[in-house]
Image (tube, rainbow, N blue to C red):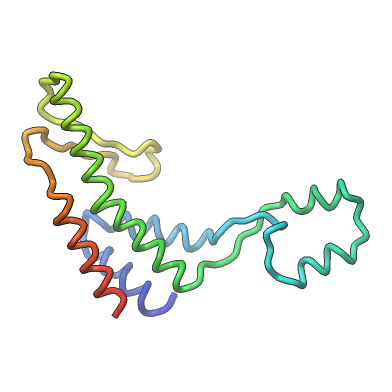
Length: 154
């Protein structure tokens, strides 16, 4: 990992509430990017398959194998930025829309609990948000995220 992605992950680790994000990102980086053998860009791989004198059925079968390759630095930074946008912009907007929909439907609930679809994703489970809280300023969050991206690009 180079300095920029490592620095971004280190910043996430400093915040107790966001350390799980860095763990998920590192796990993704470790797994690499999965693609089919057919999508393999390496000419050597393609030449190797061509030299094997395979039947069309065997070739098709081999091309369906999944392979993975490591993330390059720019892909790591794209994934980090995508994750942060989802957490700080998209998720709050979805939460506000859900809270509004519940109020519009006449719900008397005082809180809504958000949880991961897979308990293994986040060991501490979900979290609650009071429906009495004011709406999140989506524009402010978007502006702050854009400012963060600019600082990250420097």
